[in-house]
Each structure stands twice: as C-alpha cells, then as structure tokens.
Image (cartoon, rainbow, N blue to C red):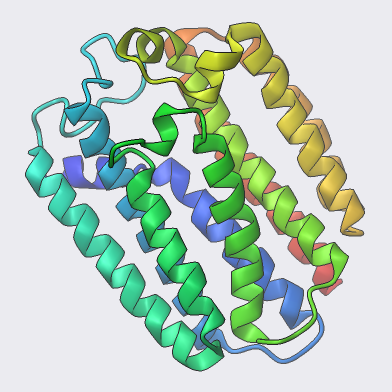
Amino acid sequence: MLGAWISATRPKTLAAAVAPVAVGTTLVAAHVPWRFDLAVGCLVGAMLLQIGCNFANDAGDALRGADTPDRLGPPRAVASGLITARAMLTAAGIALVLAALVGAWLASQSGWQLWILGVASVIAALAYTLGPVPLAYVGLGDLFVLLFFGLAAVLGAAWVQAPGWPLPAAWWYAALAVGLSATTLIAINNLRDIPTDARTGKRTLAVRLGDRATRIYHLALHLGAAGCWLGAGLPLAAAVVAIGGSALAFLVWRCQGAALNRCLGLAALLQLAGSGCAIVGMLG
C-alpha cells in the first residue's frame, strides 16, 4: 500500500516543483541576501501542490474513465484498485490544505500578493482534472504547467525572498525557460496517451494537434526554453537545453507508445540539468 501511495505522487514529475524554486531563489540570492527558511517553505509548498495535483489527477482520470486497462503509462492507483477514489481525493485535499498553510506563512512574511498566487494555485490544481470543465480535458493542461510551474513558481519564489523587488526582464525569461521545460513532460505524457485519451474524450493539446505535430511541438518547447535561457543571459543553460532537448526530441520521434515512458524521466533530468546550469551561471 505504501508503494502505491509513493507511486501516486509521481516522483519523476517532482522536478517540476524543485527546479522553479531553486531558480527563483537564486535569482534573488545573486543580488541580495536570502533566507533559507523561506526557500524551504517555497520548496515544501510547491511539492505539496504538485503532489496534491497528482493525487487529484489520479482520482479524476479514474472517475472519468480516462485511465482504461489499455493505458500505456505507469499504472494509476485508483484505476488499478489499489487505492479508492475517495481516499485519493482525501489525500489530495490534505496535501493542498498543507500547501495552503505553508503559503499562508510565506504570505505573512512577504505580503498579501502571495495570497492571490496561493489561492490561484490551489484552485488550478483542483481544476486540472476535477470540476465541470477540467483543464486537462479541454487542452489547457500545457498552459497550466507553463503558468504555475514556470512563471508563478519561479517569480513567486523570488518575490518571497525580496518582496517589492523589481522583476527584471531576465527573470521573466528564466521563469519562461523553466516553465517551457516543465511543459515538455506533459507533452511527452500526452503524446503517449493520444490513442486512449481520444477514445475517452480527453481532448488534450496532443489529441488536438495529432501525433506528428505534437512531436514537433515537443522539440519547439525545448528550443523555446533554450532561447529563454539565452535571453536571461545564461548561455550554458541555453546550450545544455538546446543540445539535450534536441537529442531527447530525436529519441521521442523514434519512440511509440509505452517506449515513451523512459523519455519522461529523461525530460525531468534535462529540466534539472538546465536549471542547475542556470544557477551556476547566476552565481558565477
């Protein structure tokens, strides 16, 4: 049972929570003093949001019939019968409440603006696969990732450390780079699931674009992230993402179905590598 819960957190996706906080904190640390406790708070809050979103997604897809027996991705806990939908939704609620509590403390340290960001993040996490019009089912999942695991997470982590600090253009470029890299994960995931999603009425962006266009879109995300790192004045990160992303896109182009699962892990590693190189560049 513990293994099922750990798997339901989708560990490979947690890079999407770690990278933006690390980059956002470093953006500030390169200029002014920073607080370790605030950085940890941002990291914990981001990971709780990610886990809560993953739990809600697991339950939501199972309840809507999107996780069918012929699913090509890793088995989902609710659809497999390992965890009930009620228990998964309860766990999602607990994770999001804890994230809200962490966000409330961060807001008390940094200003009311963070309340708005926190409330919007929790609502979006629930709306991803739950509610009358789930974001993932109408092709808005990619935009959700770009906004909340890119712009909001990076700039939010920076704001916590230095509220009121001007947001230079380079910071926006860095936030976009992180968000675009995070979006490559959902692009691969949805590319793999095009056949099953189309049959169950889940109209992801990949379903709307089709197989070939989604593969081109995946490459464009990597190149866009590389361009943004370059715009942020971080050429090493740009080079790593451009070269690594092109290599990964070539692998994705050659893979079909379940073979794309290994590409997800590689995409997460590439996001961490690009962000790590950016951090080195900012501190160097």
